[in-house]
Image (cartoon, rainbow, N blue to C red; front, side, top):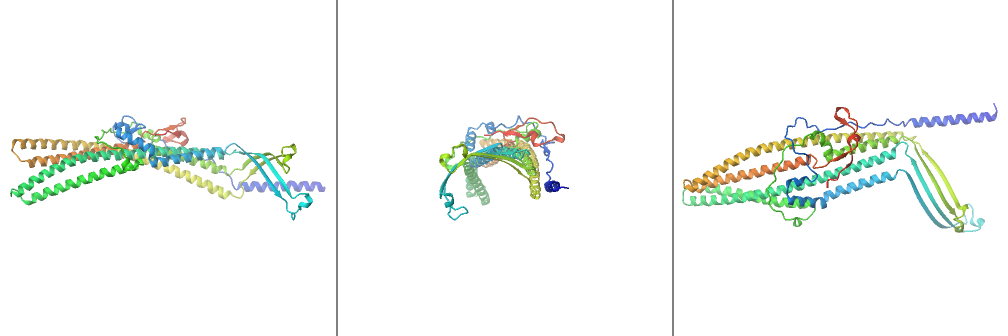
Length: 504
């Protein structure tokens, strides 16, 4: 065997050994299989809920259904300037910029540079300046650099998709924040109207108790009744005064709360006029179990976060593969400014680059495991949100039915007390009885009217809560329909919306 042949054999052996070692090391970081989209519920468990059908879903501006111009004006102020909503908008803007940043990482990047420097050579360096014949020199450089990363494994595209999904989730969360604010404004406003209605009844009850106390004082002074009767009347009068003070304080507190929801001072709150409480529509829309997924902004946000977490597992998986990029540079460089633009000053470079994950397999696996755990957490949060939505809708609908039944029975009591008051007034006019019987009957009738207002207020509050539970007019725009999946489940991609619509 000649010496040349031995050198070639040794060279080939070394090459085989090097590639064997590299393949062995790369095999230590074998990429995992691509995850399939998780199965998610495509309906809300409302089976067995027997309630009358409601005429359609809440509209986007659902509060206009109550036909109250004052409430419309308050909602307009809340949507424009409420601090909570401004915070939600800022989060959406942050998510939008993150998506733009991820999209900007794709494709070709081009950077230009220009620099000029004047430098002095050291007389004591490796090549002293006296041997070069000069101590000072100018350096001018002009260049254009191009960089392109081959996203063969889809890491950058998955990063961009995850950022877009998080942006859609932020938009849905903004809609949820707007709905929560609108619900709070409506609840506080109707609570104030309830306080005003009860204050009117409290004033009438207070006048009735004062008149009864005066009669009791006269009868005790003349020895007709024992003193205990007067003390009882005074106690009833003090209770009526206490109830009125509590109602007046509640109304003032609600004005302060309403102003804070609008982000203004209480003095800047528009003047409010007393209006009757609105009538209430019972029931839930037909097909609520199927449609609620797309009509609840919190469910939509959870669904987008599942999609973002799934894309993030793709990013973590792509880390197992090598990164391949290419950089090119074209420019001009010269130490003589007069020759900078001459052909001899041209400079070019082409730099392909390959980055292999070799000794970081443990960190890659840990990062991928973390992304899978985050996906599992997002799916669990989605399931929890769906269950909570079902519980909220069911409890509000059943609560509305219970309150409606209570109002029917309470109306019967109110009618009976009205008849008793009419009979007592008739006997008073005929001189058969004194005014005490009539005053007692009136006090009882006013108390029943107050109870009726409280039940009506509960019915309005429950209706507002049901509107909020039904999504308050939110509608998630869906992607193109995907093939049906078994067991009423589907992947996020199958029904996730391309963009949630802006509720305000």
